[in-house]
Image (cartoon, rainbow, N blue to C red; front, side, top):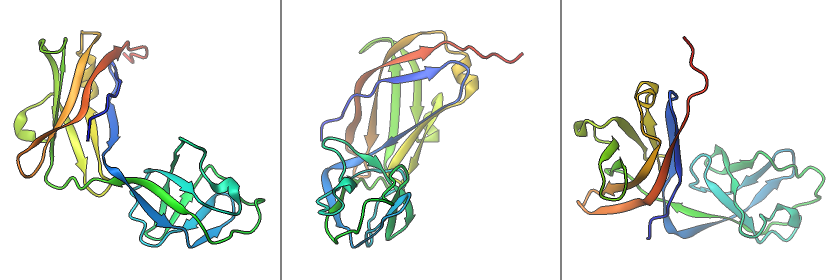
Length: 203
């Protein structure tokens, strides 16, 4: 699938912890078998396979129709257990009786076992390297990329000591991954990155 752009900012003097989810381009559909019309609302979805905080859609519910996610929107799933998810911001306590119908729809979480992620920041495309991050400690990068295979995500981590020393104000970056078969894929397409000034400096 084609990699998407993602504008990134670093706060000088602050620890960067940027979580990124990674999915396959196709959708997974899981039928809703029961619903607790409460505040917050909880769905019974057998063996849903949804990672924590994964974006989902609710669609096809005939009653109450308010449960369906707005067109072109997603909501964040809170995982109660392997068969139950909660939409914490949704109050369904006055919406009437649930008729068994509808699906939870989400982009299929990618299997990241054995993947190595790496990232470089440059002054421009093909320019000088300003910063590097990698999930392989042997790369000796400025920061880490932590891979969470259970959550199909990776996290960009830069210590405050590193961001404090940054003198440049912006550049471009991308992220690529090496899969277990040795192929290299683009994860984040070339995108702008900026460094925000440090306000709170505790002496």
